[in-house]
Image (cartoon, rainbow, N blue to C red; front, top):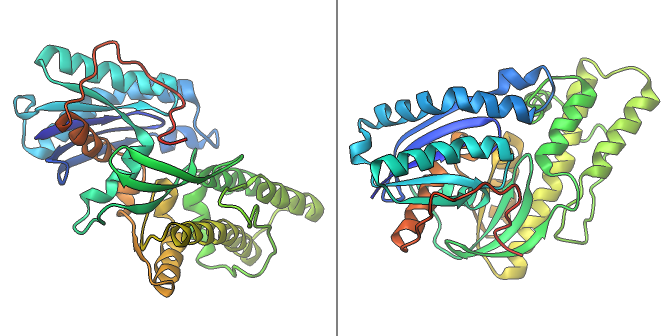
Length: 333
């Protein structure tokens, strides 16, 4: 089954063509990073307008890269939520228009389930069940995953998500956007033990990053002057290590509690080089196997949406043209 996936939940306009939920034929992402960088974060109204400009060219490019036309497409999978409503509506409207005009089955996909499903586009994906850490700008959640659509919640953030904590720190340090990318780069030249930052809720599988952000704010106010040079690298490395510590520690603990030997780490923050290194080393030390998609499949993309869409359509799921966007949509309670 050849599926066209469409993703527009935040500030990436994406389209992809996937065959049989495993074979990636194309994956096109139109980024808005340069547009939002001047504001230090995503501006929803601007994001939705940029999606309108990019959606048609992105889909056409995905089809061209796959060497196919719409005649070869057998179904449409589109992100229904969670995300920014204005952004989601652009992708949904295009998906419904294509489905209606070409008489194709349409299915709405949960963006978070998509992140987990990205691992099935890698050469050696794990079998079910496994523990999944979904870690991004808006979400930091641990699930036990029994199968497609079968998620059990084990832990979640009580305030800021990890990606949000990175972006807020970058804004405080005035080092640019997107924060996670810049901090990752600076941290490579820094000492992760140079500065003391708190690790929140260590006795729980839930997360809290608001205290971490506040500690950086207080530190900067006490200094009175911004970090520069080596100190900036040390601050980035130390702050990053505080986030990485709790993500790795809690996920491995969840896997141990569940008796799981396989862990999937996904979402935009999973592209962080320190997080990837720590997970691989610490999981191996615990006799666990960790699976992380390549960075291009960690950030928002439509290929992951097409994977979930394939399974939903094969199960007989069909959504009508009244399909609407949802800003909040947990995959498990």
